[in-house]
Each structure stands twice: as structure tokens, then as C-alpha cells.
Image (cartoon, rainbow, N blue to C red; front, side, top):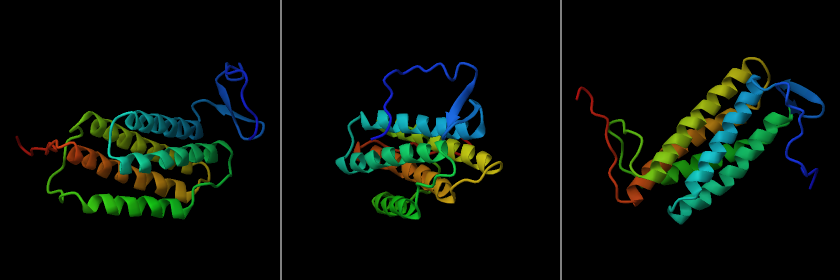
Length: 181
């Protein structure tokens, strides 16, 4: 394993910059740092979700996703590193298809919520969408890994379906959006 921090503060960011890759510094509000930060927020929300009781299969699915999100942050931290692969996007698609098979078809939009874990999962979904938007913004300025963008897109869909599954397995009801109530 590489370098380990023995001291958490370094003072190198006190002037509003942060390090990328070997010897590159950028402003802390750079689009790349915004994307990395939002992916970190998403990972923290998934960690919060994992602290709650849920079906074992969902728990087992989310832990590798946390590692992959950390990999994605690493990929963005050391350009032009490519870590996220098409096979990881395909794995999310398979998981998404399997989970969605068990759920009733949607005829209306549902409101976020249902249970505390489902609500956290919805919050993770919206944060994932924001991470995706941050990556799109970055892609307008710099080259990014197209698979990373696909990964976040599929992950947000997966988190939506997982929220529905968490509501279902808890025996709670989904709240349908009432048009023209």
C-alpha cells in the first residue's frame, strides 16, 4: 500500500487550492473537485444507508458500489486515469433488472420516502444525479471517462429501484404523486 497520512492536516489547501495527481494544484471550486466532492457525498449517504437494517442482498450490493465510487473519485483525482469499466456499468444494469422484476410496475410518479432507509436511498439517488451533472459540466472542459458517466447514470436508476424495494420489503406503501389534487 502507498503513502499513508500520519497527520490529517497539511495546510496545503489553506489558500483555496487542492492537489490533483502528481504536483498539480487546482482551485477547490474547480469542476473536477466539485465532481469528486459530490461523489464523496454520495458515498457517505450510501454509508449512512448501510448503517440501517435492510435485506442482506441489498447490503451486499451496496458495499462494492462504495468501493467503486471511491475508485471513481480516484480516477478523477489523477487525470487521465481510467478505472471505471463497461463491465461495472453492465453489473449495475443486471442488478437493476433483477431488482425491478420483483416490483410492481409504476403507473404514476412516487414521492420520495416510504421508510427511513428508503428516504436515505432517495437522497442518495438525488445526490448521484447531482454527481452526474457535475461530471457533465467537467466533460465540457476536460476529457472524462465515458464509462464513469454511464456508471453514475445507472447507479441513480439503481438507487431509485432500491428505494422502492426497501419500501416493499418493509411492508410500507409507496406514496403516489397526486396530479391535480
